[in-house]
Length: 334
Image (cartoon, rainbow, N blue to C red; front, top):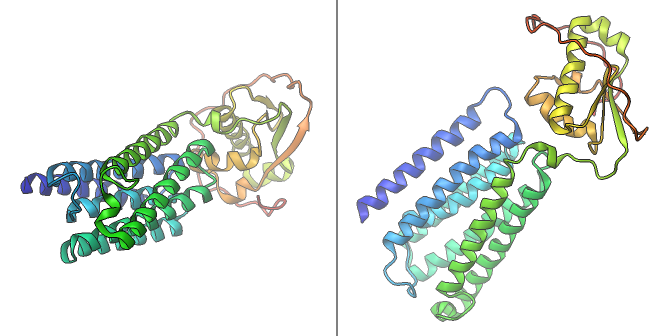
Protein backbone atom coordinates (compact mmCIF):
# COMPACT_ATOMS: atom_id res chain seq x y z
CA UNK A 1 0.00 0.00 0.00
CA UNK A 2 2.81 2.39 0.88
CA UNK A 3 4.59 1.70 -2.38
CA UNK A 4 1.36 2.32 -4.31
CA UNK A 5 0.84 5.66 -2.56
CA UNK A 6 4.42 6.69 -3.25
CA UNK A 7 4.11 5.66 -6.89
CA UNK A 8 0.90 7.60 -7.38
CA UNK A 9 2.40 10.67 -5.73
CA UNK A 10 5.53 10.52 -7.89
CA UNK A 11 3.49 10.23 -11.08
CA UNK A 12 1.18 13.08 -10.08
CA UNK A 13 4.00 15.41 -9.05
CA UNK A 14 5.99 14.57 -12.19
CA UNK A 15 3.03 15.36 -14.45
CA UNK A 16 2.39 18.64 -12.64
CA UNK A 17 6.03 19.74 -12.87
CA UNK A 18 6.18 18.99 -16.59
CA UNK A 19 2.89 20.68 -17.50
CA UNK A 20 3.10 23.73 -15.25
CA UNK A 21 6.83 24.20 -15.80
CA UNK A 22 6.36 24.09 -19.56
CA UNK A 23 3.54 26.64 -19.36
CA UNK A 24 5.63 29.09 -17.33
CA UNK A 25 8.68 28.56 -19.55
CA UNK A 26 6.73 29.23 -22.76
CA UNK A 27 8.42 32.16 -24.50
CA UNK A 28 5.52 32.99 -26.76
CA UNK A 29 2.31 34.07 -24.97
CA UNK A 30 -0.26 31.29 -24.79
CA UNK A 31 -3.92 31.64 -25.61
CA UNK A 32 -5.63 32.05 -22.20
CA UNK A 33 -7.92 29.10 -22.75
CA UNK A 34 -5.05 26.83 -23.84
CA UNK A 35 -2.98 27.82 -20.81
CA UNK A 36 -5.96 27.23 -18.53
CA UNK A 37 -6.67 23.77 -19.92
CA UNK A 38 -3.04 22.70 -19.55
CA UNK A 39 -2.79 23.59 -15.88
CA UNK A 40 -6.36 22.42 -15.16
CA UNK A 41 -5.36 19.01 -16.52
CA UNK A 42 -2.43 18.95 -14.08
CA UNK A 43 -4.84 19.88 -11.29
CA UNK A 44 -7.06 16.97 -12.26
CA UNK A 45 -4.12 14.56 -12.19
CA UNK A 46 -3.15 15.76 -8.71
CA UNK A 47 -6.76 15.48 -7.46
CA UNK A 48 -7.00 11.96 -8.86
CA UNK A 49 -3.77 11.03 -7.12
CA UNK A 50 -5.11 12.40 -3.84
CA UNK A 51 -8.30 10.37 -4.22
CA UNK A 52 -6.37 7.16 -4.85
CA UNK A 53 -4.16 7.75 -1.83
CA UNK A 54 -7.19 8.45 0.37
CA UNK A 55 -8.84 5.21 -0.76
CA UNK A 56 -5.66 3.25 -0.12
CA UNK A 57 -4.84 4.85 3.23
CA UNK A 58 -8.24 5.32 4.88
CA UNK A 59 -8.35 3.23 8.11
CA UNK A 60 -12.03 3.73 9.01
CA UNK A 61 -14.67 5.92 7.39
CA UNK A 62 -15.76 7.61 10.62
CA UNK A 63 -12.26 8.17 12.00
CA UNK A 64 -10.27 11.42 11.78
CA UNK A 65 -6.85 10.59 10.37
CA UNK A 66 -3.93 12.31 8.63
CA UNK A 67 -2.51 11.19 5.31
CA UNK A 68 0.48 13.40 4.53
CA UNK A 69 0.75 12.73 0.81
CA UNK A 70 -3.00 12.76 0.15
CA UNK A 71 -3.63 15.90 2.19
CA UNK A 72 -0.84 17.81 0.45
CA UNK A 73 -1.97 16.59 -2.98
CA UNK A 74 -5.55 17.70 -2.30
CA UNK A 75 -4.48 21.23 -1.39
CA UNK A 76 -2.08 21.38 -4.34
CA UNK A 77 -4.84 20.34 -6.75
CA UNK A 78 -6.92 23.32 -5.65
CA UNK A 79 -3.88 25.58 -5.81
CA UNK A 80 -3.18 24.41 -9.36
CA UNK A 81 -6.70 25.36 -10.38
CA UNK A 82 -5.98 28.81 -8.98
CA UNK A 83 -2.88 28.97 -11.16
CA UNK A 84 -4.93 27.83 -14.16
CA UNK A 85 -7.43 30.68 -13.91
CA UNK A 86 -4.64 33.24 -13.43
CA UNK A 87 -2.38 32.23 -16.33
CA UNK A 88 -3.58 35.27 -18.27
CA UNK A 89 -1.44 37.43 -15.95
CA UNK A 90 2.07 36.21 -15.16
CA UNK A 91 2.23 38.14 -11.88
CA UNK A 92 -1.04 36.60 -10.64
CA UNK A 93 0.01 33.14 -11.79
CA UNK A 94 3.29 33.32 -9.89
CA UNK A 95 1.52 34.61 -6.77
CA UNK A 96 -0.97 31.73 -7.04
CA UNK A 97 1.93 29.29 -7.42
CA UNK A 98 3.56 30.64 -4.26
CA UNK A 99 0.27 30.36 -2.34
CA UNK A 100 -0.26 26.77 -3.53
CA UNK A 101 3.30 25.77 -2.60
CA UNK A 102 3.11 27.33 0.86
CA UNK A 103 -0.31 25.81 1.56
CA UNK A 104 0.83 22.36 0.42
CA UNK A 105 3.98 22.57 2.54
CA UNK A 106 2.08 23.69 5.65
CA UNK A 107 -0.45 20.88 5.26
CA UNK A 108 2.25 18.27 4.67
CA UNK A 109 4.24 19.34 7.76
CA UNK A 110 1.15 19.50 9.98
CA UNK A 111 -0.08 16.10 8.80
CA UNK A 112 3.30 14.61 9.58
CA UNK A 113 4.03 16.27 12.91
CA UNK A 114 0.75 17.26 14.58
CA UNK A 115 -2.05 15.13 16.05
CA UNK A 116 -4.60 13.96 13.52
CA UNK A 117 -7.37 16.23 14.79
CA UNK A 118 -5.24 19.38 14.59
CA UNK A 119 -3.80 18.33 11.23
CA UNK A 120 -7.31 17.89 9.85
CA UNK A 121 -8.25 21.41 11.02
CA UNK A 122 -5.15 22.82 9.32
CA UNK A 123 -6.10 20.98 6.13
CA UNK A 124 -9.63 22.36 6.18
CA UNK A 125 -8.46 25.94 6.76
CA UNK A 126 -5.88 25.58 3.97
CA UNK A 127 -8.62 24.34 1.64
CA UNK A 128 -10.77 27.32 2.60
CA UNK A 129 -7.97 29.75 1.77
CA UNK A 130 -6.92 28.14 -1.51
CA UNK A 131 -10.51 27.64 -2.71
CA UNK A 132 -11.37 31.24 -1.85
CA UNK A 133 -8.28 32.52 -3.67
CA UNK A 134 -9.15 30.41 -6.72
CA UNK A 135 -12.70 31.79 -6.75
CA UNK A 136 -11.44 35.39 -6.59
CA UNK A 137 -8.89 34.79 -9.34
CA UNK A 138 -11.55 33.17 -11.54
CA UNK A 139 -13.90 36.14 -11.09
CA UNK A 140 -11.11 38.57 -11.99
CA UNK A 141 -10.23 36.68 -15.18
CA UNK A 142 -11.88 38.45 -18.13
CA UNK A 143 -10.13 36.47 -20.89
CA UNK A 144 -11.78 33.09 -20.35
CA UNK A 145 -15.38 32.30 -21.39
CA UNK A 146 -17.69 33.87 -18.85
CA UNK A 147 -20.20 31.11 -18.02
CA UNK A 148 -17.76 28.26 -17.23
CA UNK A 149 -15.54 30.67 -15.32
CA UNK A 150 -18.46 31.74 -13.14
CA UNK A 151 -19.46 28.10 -12.57
CA UNK A 152 -15.90 27.29 -11.53
CA UNK A 153 -15.75 30.30 -9.21
CA UNK A 154 -19.08 29.34 -7.62
CA UNK A 155 -17.97 25.74 -7.02
CA UNK A 156 -14.70 26.87 -5.46
CA UNK A 157 -16.43 29.47 -3.29
CA UNK A 158 -18.92 26.88 -2.04
CA UNK A 159 -16.24 24.34 -1.15
CA UNK A 160 -14.11 27.01 0.49
CA UNK A 161 -17.00 28.07 2.72
CA UNK A 162 -17.89 24.44 3.47
CA UNK A 163 -14.28 23.66 4.40
CA UNK A 164 -14.11 26.73 6.64
CA UNK A 165 -17.33 25.67 8.38
CA UNK A 166 -15.95 22.14 8.88
CA UNK A 167 -12.73 23.55 10.30
CA UNK A 168 -14.57 25.84 12.73
CA UNK A 169 -16.86 23.02 13.85
CA UNK A 170 -13.89 20.70 14.36
CA UNK A 171 -12.07 23.37 16.37
CA UNK A 172 -15.08 24.07 18.60
CA UNK A 173 -16.62 20.63 19.04
CA UNK A 174 -13.80 18.22 18.22
CA UNK A 175 -14.46 14.82 16.63
CA UNK A 176 -18.16 15.03 17.56
CA UNK A 177 -18.63 17.54 14.72
CA UNK A 178 -17.89 14.77 12.22
CA UNK A 179 -20.12 12.09 13.69
CA UNK A 180 -22.24 10.08 11.22
CA UNK A 181 -25.36 11.90 10.10
CA UNK A 182 -24.00 15.38 10.85
CA UNK A 183 -23.56 18.03 8.10
CA UNK A 184 -19.80 17.53 8.39
CA UNK A 185 -19.74 13.76 8.66
CA UNK A 186 -18.06 11.44 6.21
CA UNK A 187 -21.08 10.97 3.94
CA UNK A 188 -21.90 14.69 3.83
CA UNK A 189 -18.28 15.64 3.18
CA UNK A 190 -17.96 13.01 0.46
CA UNK A 191 -21.20 14.18 -1.19
CA UNK A 192 -20.03 17.80 -1.19
CA UNK A 193 -16.64 16.81 -2.62
CA UNK A 194 -18.16 14.74 -5.42
CA UNK A 195 -20.66 17.48 -6.29
CA UNK A 196 -17.87 20.07 -6.49
CA UNK A 197 -15.65 17.75 -8.55
CA UNK A 198 -18.45 17.11 -11.04
CA UNK A 199 -19.24 20.83 -11.28
CA UNK A 200 -15.60 21.72 -11.89
CA UNK A 201 -15.31 18.97 -14.51
CA UNK A 202 -18.34 20.39 -16.32
CA UNK A 203 -16.89 23.90 -16.17
CA UNK A 204 -13.57 22.72 -17.60
CA UNK A 205 -15.36 20.78 -20.34
CA UNK A 206 -17.31 23.93 -21.24
CA UNK A 207 -14.00 25.67 -21.85
CA UNK A 208 -13.58 23.36 -24.83
CA UNK A 209 -16.67 24.82 -26.52
CA UNK A 210 -15.64 27.09 -29.41
CA UNK A 211 -15.20 30.70 -28.42
CA UNK A 212 -18.17 31.58 -30.59
CA UNK A 213 -20.57 30.96 -27.71
CA UNK A 214 -18.51 33.09 -25.33
CA UNK A 215 -18.50 36.13 -27.60
CA UNK A 216 -22.06 36.47 -28.89
CA UNK A 217 -23.59 39.89 -28.79
CA UNK A 218 -26.65 40.35 -26.58
CA UNK A 219 -28.42 42.57 -29.14
CA UNK A 220 -28.81 42.19 -32.87
CA UNK A 221 -27.11 45.47 -33.82
CA UNK A 222 -23.85 45.26 -35.75
CA UNK A 223 -20.50 46.77 -34.90
CA UNK A 224 -18.00 47.75 -37.57
CA UNK A 225 -14.39 47.13 -36.57
CA UNK A 226 -11.88 48.72 -38.93
CA UNK A 227 -8.24 49.81 -39.14
CA UNK A 228 -8.03 53.49 -38.27
CA UNK A 229 -6.16 56.11 -40.38
CA UNK A 230 -5.71 53.72 -43.25
CA UNK A 231 -3.45 55.96 -45.35
CA UNK A 232 -1.04 56.43 -42.47
CA UNK A 233 -1.01 52.70 -41.71
CA UNK A 234 -0.40 51.82 -45.37
CA UNK A 235 2.54 54.21 -45.51
CA UNK A 236 4.05 53.01 -42.21
CA UNK A 237 3.63 49.26 -42.73
CA UNK A 238 3.46 49.04 -46.47
CA UNK A 239 0.43 47.94 -48.49
CA UNK A 240 1.19 44.21 -48.14
CA UNK A 241 1.34 44.20 -44.33
CA UNK A 242 -1.60 46.62 -44.07
CA UNK A 243 -3.69 44.27 -46.20
CA UNK A 244 -2.57 41.33 -44.07
CA UNK A 245 -3.78 43.15 -40.95
CA UNK A 246 -7.24 43.45 -42.49
CA UNK A 247 -7.28 39.75 -43.41
CA UNK A 248 -6.18 38.79 -39.90
CA UNK A 249 -8.94 40.96 -38.42
CA UNK A 250 -11.58 39.38 -40.64
CA UNK A 251 -10.36 35.83 -39.97
CA UNK A 252 -10.20 36.33 -36.20
CA UNK A 253 -13.70 37.78 -36.21
CA UNK A 254 -15.06 34.83 -38.22
CA UNK A 255 -13.62 32.47 -35.59
CA UNK A 256 -15.73 34.23 -32.94
CA UNK A 257 -18.73 35.12 -35.10
CA UNK A 258 -19.28 32.91 -38.18
CA UNK A 259 -22.00 35.32 -39.36
CA UNK A 260 -19.68 38.34 -39.48
CA UNK A 261 -19.43 40.21 -42.78
CA UNK A 262 -16.24 41.46 -44.35
CA UNK A 263 -16.29 45.17 -45.21
CA UNK A 264 -13.76 47.57 -46.62
CA UNK A 265 -10.70 47.63 -44.29
CA UNK A 266 -12.50 45.70 -41.55
CA UNK A 267 -15.47 43.61 -40.55
CA UNK A 268 -19.07 43.97 -39.31
CA UNK A 269 -20.01 41.73 -36.39
CA UNK A 270 -22.54 41.22 -33.61
CA UNK A 271 -19.86 40.49 -31.00
CA UNK A 272 -20.27 42.50 -27.82
CA UNK A 273 -17.31 44.81 -27.08
CA UNK A 274 -15.72 43.63 -30.29
CA UNK A 275 -12.31 45.26 -29.92
CA UNK A 276 -11.88 43.79 -26.43
CA UNK A 277 -13.02 40.33 -27.55
CA UNK A 278 -10.64 40.39 -30.54
CA UNK A 279 -7.59 41.49 -28.58
CA UNK A 280 -6.80 38.00 -27.30
CA UNK A 281 -7.12 36.09 -30.60
CA UNK A 282 -5.26 38.73 -32.60
CA UNK A 283 -2.44 38.80 -30.06
CA UNK A 284 -2.02 35.10 -29.35
CA UNK A 285 -3.08 33.50 -32.65
CA UNK A 286 -2.09 36.12 -35.23
CA UNK A 287 0.90 37.69 -33.50
CA UNK A 288 -0.33 41.28 -33.41
CA UNK A 289 1.72 43.72 -31.36
CA UNK A 290 0.17 46.25 -28.94
CA UNK A 291 0.61 49.13 -31.40
CA UNK A 292 -1.27 47.13 -34.03
CA UNK A 293 -4.10 46.36 -31.60
CA UNK A 294 -4.31 50.11 -30.95
CA UNK A 295 -5.20 50.65 -34.62
CA UNK A 296 -8.63 49.02 -34.18
CA UNK A 297 -11.66 51.28 -33.99
CA UNK A 298 -15.27 50.19 -33.51
CA UNK A 299 -18.42 52.00 -34.66
CA UNK A 300 -21.37 50.45 -32.80
CA UNK A 301 -25.05 50.23 -33.73
CA UNK A 302 -24.69 50.44 -37.50
CA UNK A 303 -27.29 49.15 -39.95
CA UNK A 304 -28.91 46.01 -38.67
CA UNK A 305 -28.84 44.48 -42.14
CA UNK A 306 -25.24 43.47 -42.81
CA UNK A 307 -23.58 45.09 -45.82
CA UNK A 308 -22.93 43.01 -48.87
CA UNK A 309 -19.76 40.95 -48.72
CA UNK A 310 -17.21 42.33 -51.18
CA UNK A 311 -15.33 40.01 -53.46
CA UNK A 312 -12.11 38.84 -51.88
CA UNK A 313 -8.94 37.42 -53.28
CA UNK A 314 -6.58 35.44 -51.16
CA UNK A 315 -3.11 36.89 -50.90
CA UNK A 316 -0.16 34.63 -51.43
CA UNK A 317 0.92 32.76 -48.35
CA UNK A 318 4.51 33.50 -49.25
CA UNK A 319 4.48 37.04 -47.93
CA UNK A 320 7.72 37.70 -46.16
CA UNK A 321 7.36 38.75 -42.55
CA UNK A 322 10.54 40.74 -42.23
CA UNK A 323 11.23 43.51 -39.81
CA UNK A 324 8.16 45.71 -39.70
CA UNK A 325 8.43 49.46 -39.25
CA UNK A 326 6.71 50.86 -36.20
CA UNK A 327 4.12 53.47 -37.19
CA UNK A 328 3.64 56.66 -35.23
CA UNK A 329 0.98 56.49 -32.51
CA UNK A 330 -2.43 56.49 -34.13
CA UNK A 331 -5.33 57.19 -31.82
CA UNK A 332 -5.65 56.03 -28.23
CA UNK A 333 -4.61 52.58 -27.06
CA UNK A 334 -7.45 50.20 -26.20
